[in-house]
Length: 121
Image 1 (tube, rainbow, N blue to C red):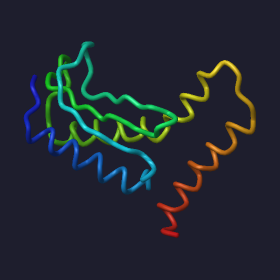
Image 2: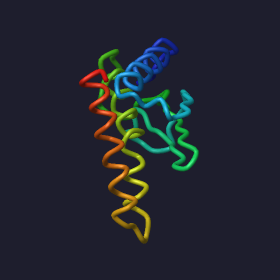
Image 3: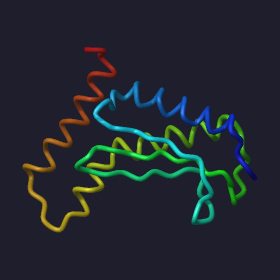
């Protein structure tokens, strides 16, 4: 199954919506629409920790049983934005040595993000 240019525009629109919703304004985000290297990939993302940059990518070909629908494209956009939001924790957890002084600020950054979105501070 193939996605279209309209699907890609919807993907970008939805990503931007969730980036705004979660207040992820510290990220430099780029988008792409290309053929996946692996099977069963609807969308994926690549992130750079220290630069706070991210590529959010919609697959041109969905090689699995998930039908290409607008709702599934929206869900894929949401998923990739959540991956971006949680990437710093993933990065830190993969470091060989990690201290409480590195984990605690990241946890509080996420909590502040949720507070600012939910309570509109």
